Length: 237
Image 1 (cartoon, helix red, strand yellow):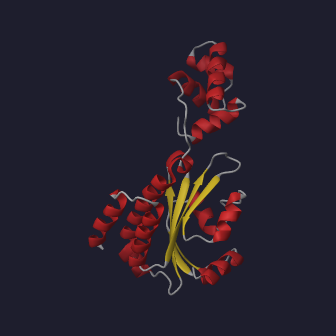
Image 2 (cartoon, one colour; image 1 turned 90 degrees about the horizontal axis):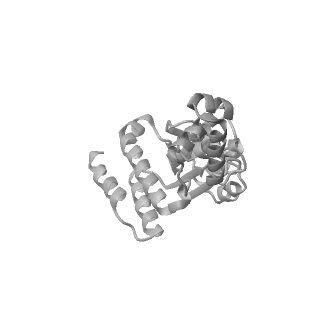
């Protein structure tokens, strides 16, 4: 499979003028690896109670409607796995014990066998690339032969999809915390009170409250708890 790396590097670095060209390039790569179709799912936890699910590729249309209602990561077993693990999975519709309705719908669509690679991304966002087909299971020998190429393709698609989605694919941070604000919010996220933080940092409690208030304002939060969550999700610690 060594000769495939040059193709993947080209896919990674080439400038593609529109989404259709990008998807066509990925289609060709996926088919060369013996699969029929692919889709990319990106879950951005903002807001926390209603994460944004972005779907690209040949995904089942009912995923989009259910995703818009916030029904994820429990949307399906593949997304659920990707939310909690970074280990790729090989799946077959007739070997799954749970959620038979989900796997039955997948099989009816022609997606009977596949490979899914979770991708842990920036700021607690998570993604998964799925390659699927309907003709035969993914064997151990096939996986052993293609594992490196599949993993490399997953990273190429991740970068390409992030470029294609732009700001939608990330938690847009439009502010900066001062070093002291960051320090105060770090202790706030650890459950410390204003007086405890003041003692730890050897500053006045009013100064702690001042910095927390600034952080709440900058993050457009309603209280210190929400501000601490946002700062953590945005990777500012």
